[in-house]
Image (tube, rainbow, N blue to C red; front, side):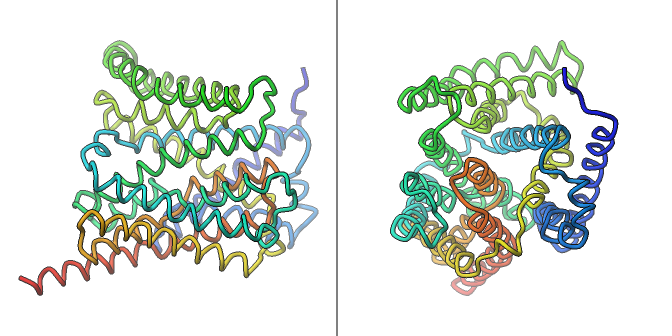
Length: 419
C-alpha cells in the first residue's frame, strides 16, 4: 500500500497549520468589521494561492502547495470531507415546522425569489454563452441552468447570522425571510440534482431517469420515514451512549453514509449530507447545545479548509473579468430583490417590509461557492466565471446587512409616523 513519505507528511501538516492559522486570523479581522467569517476565510485562500503568495514566491508556493502528488491528493480529501460536512450543518438549519407555519406567505416569497432570478440568470448565458465563458456547446443548456440555479439560491446560514446580528431574527419579517430561504434551499438543491445528472457522472451504471427517481425517493424517504426513525432513536442514543461523543459519532456516520449513497447514484455527495442534516436537525430530541457543538466542530475546523481551498489554485487577478463580474452582480441583485419584493407584496406586506425581504433574499454565500467549485471541478465553467461568482457572493454578503437594516429602520419610522 502506497503511503506518504516523510517529507510529504511534514508538508501536509504544514499545509493544514498554515491554512487554519491564516483563515482564523482573517476571520477574526472580518468579525471585528462586522462581516461573516466566511469572507475572511475566502480572502485567506486568495492570499495563500497563486494570486498573492504564488506571485511573490512562486518556488516556495509550488513546494508548499503542490498541485499533484500524494500530499495534494490527501489535502483534496480533506476538502471533499469539509464540503460534505458544510452541507450537513446547512441542513441542520432547516426547520420544516417553521416553513409549514409561515404557510402561504413563505411559499409566495420563496417561489418568486427563486423563479425570477432563475429566469434572469438563465437567459443571459443561454443567449450569449460566449460572454460567460462557455467553451463546449454540448453543455449549453446545462451551463445556463447552472447559472440560473446559482443566482436563485439564498444563503441560509449567512442570512440567519445577519438577522441575529440585527436582532430581528424572531420578528415577523425575520421569520418570513428564514422560512422562505429554507424553501429555496430545498427546491434549489432538488433542481441542482438534475443539473448534476445532466453534467454526466462517473458512475456509468445509471441513466438520468434512474438517478432522478432514486434522488426523489431518497429525499421523500429521509424527510418522512427517516425523520420519524431518527426522532425515535435519538432519545435512546442520548440516554445510553456517552454525550456528546455518541451523538456526534453516529450523526457523522449517518451523514457520510447518505453522502456515499447520493454520490453512488450519480448525485454529488453533498446532497445526501444536506438531506440528512434536515432530517436530523428537525428532531425535537436534538438539543440546541448538541447543534452548537456540531457547528463549532465543523465551522472552526473543516469550513476554513474548504473556503481557503477556493483560492489555492485559482488566480483571482489573471481570471478577473470586470464586465462579467458587473453583469453577474447586477443580475443577482435585480433578480433576487425584485423576486423577494414581489412575493412579499403579493402576500400583503408593506413596501418597506417587502424591500427588507428582497434584500434579505439577495444574500448569497456558502452554497453558491460550493456549486461553483463543483462546476469548476467538473469542467462546466472556467476560472473567470468562478471568480465572478465568488466576488458576487462577497459583494452581496457585505452590503446585504446595511441595506436590510436601512429598510427595517425606514419601516419602523413609517409605522411610527402613521400612529
